[in-house]
Length: 198
Image 1 (cartoon, rainbow, N blue to C red):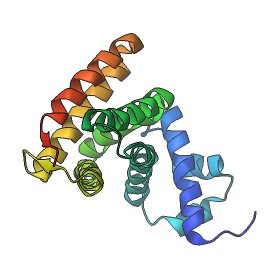
Image 2 (image 1 turned 45 degrees about the vertical axis):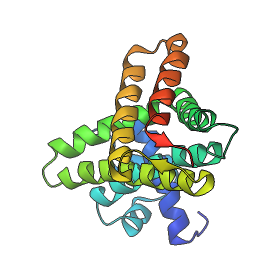
Image 3 (image 1 turned 180 degrees about the vertical axis):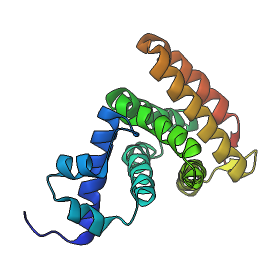
Image 4 (image 1 turned 30 degrees about the horizontal axis):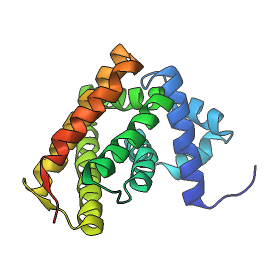
C-alpha cells in the first residue's frame, strides 16, 4: 500500500464511503466496509477519521463539492440573466441525472443524522452548507454581472436551497425526464424575477 499524505488519504476514504453508502445504505455501511472499498487497512481509516460523525461530515461536504464545481463553471455570464441562471440550473440538473445515487444518499444522510442521537448537528450542518453554497454562487453572479437583488442574499440562498432540494427529491421519486426542461424554465424565470440587472 502506497503511503499517501493524510489529506489525500482522507479524500480517498471519503470517496470510498460515498460509493459504499450509496450502494449499501448508511446504516449498513461500516468502517470496515469503507476501508475495504478504499483498499486500505482499518487502522488507516481510524488514523484519518476520529469518528463516524467526522466521516459523515466529510461525505456531506464532498458530495456538495461535486455538484458545486460544475455549477460554478456553468455560471459564467451569458447574453442575458435568464440564460446565465438557466445554465447554472442545467449544470446542476445534469449532475442529478448522472449521479442519482449520490443525491439520494444526501437525503438518507439527513434522515440518519436526525434519527441517530448525537448526530443531529450533522443534518443542521448539511443544510447550512447548502445555504452557504448558494450564498457563494449568488456572490459570484453579483460580482461578474453587477446584479442587484430584490430580496436579501441570505433569504434568496435559503430559498434556492429549499427549492432545489424539493425538485431533486421529486425527480428521484418520479423520474420523468421529459417534464424537467419546462420545470427548469419556470424556475429560471422565477429566480430571474428576484434579481435586477444593473
